[in-house]
Image (cartoon, rainbow, N blue to C red; front, side, top):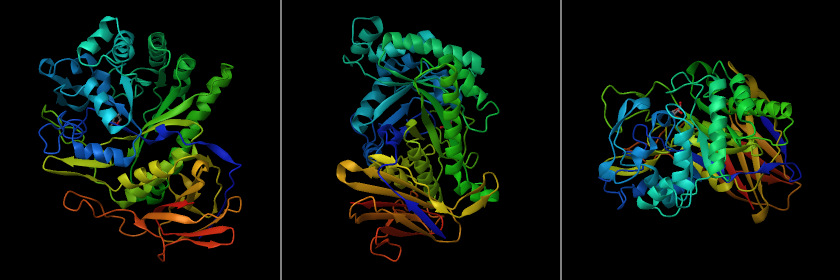
Length: 501
Ligand code: AHR
């Protein structure tokens, strides 16, 4: 299948925001306890953080981590997680039917985030709580000194403010499963008032209003419009959440998950801009895609009967095909670099995660680790417009979609070009031909490939190194120059990244 693309640095979409490479740590299952924090583990450092997980987090190239939830935050009392650990109360984690020992809280998270070299992104509880508690938390975290909350932070070991910039006003408040679930009007009013009060404490913060929990919510579209009627002038972002799953009856649709992500992002931007236009506002909101991933809802347990800390919840094993789809979802985010300012792969460790950690063995990388790490590493600079000319493939849900996708990032500072390419055709090779005449004589320095074969392979505890991207440089799968064109064969169901310098 031929696919033609012309690339020119004159047609820029926008700079790749470094916050696009966020992840998410929730007090859910074994993400915190038994994930990033496990004092009894042989890999634990003196703070109880797993050093192997910290190293993999850095290798993943994560730039930001959202915390502490997720559904968990809608029943969370943040004060339970500060002060002397032996005096912290044990509570019920109502979102995930487990117990919360509170050994890991705000101070531990901020200190872990510093070691992981990631920006912390906090969520406040707008489920069981409201304006006052959100303000107390912000004052505790960011106010320099001289007030009850900021002085308590100092007494608890952190005289310097945490200086947390990004704040989510609740989590998935449109979802009937959410503790304290609200109508769009009720949530919008509360979010606007909470945001206003928080800005009075620290005008430099950036705020995220809750959008829809999935694009399939019956309230999708109207929820965003109503919430933004209340919050447009107060917030900087509206959130999106979406999880994708392989439906055996529509594999074509699954391989086109990025098209569904594109539609979702475009729909939310259109709604936000509609409200902005109605308000005659010159501000343009951005979107925060702060939960996204592949999740086979129902394949692995999502609840437990027992009240225990850190139960095993949704510990998905990902295969190569999942990694191809994760790579394609990252391409969708990059394509919207001008409007998606923040994104977070949910979650970081064990719970639908690129990193797996067990009690008696070193942590390992799942297949989905690789497209994320490669994109975070190579997608630096400006996303350029690409309009691939290629045949379509049919899907049940999304109709006909392009058989291939291409995203190009121009790294002008280093005279480099990065090409991300997807073939979603299930049998045929796509012959990508890119016209690069607008660039100087660039040579391919890296060409890495996932998929094409071994689509069911995964990295497990027994075979933690089985899957890794393969280099196509100098192989039959490699690229060739033909005058101004770069020709790249894309195997069926594959994701590739090429670096040219
Ligand atoms: O990431 C798992 C859960 O999915 C989060 O707690 C919630 O926000 C979403 O529904």
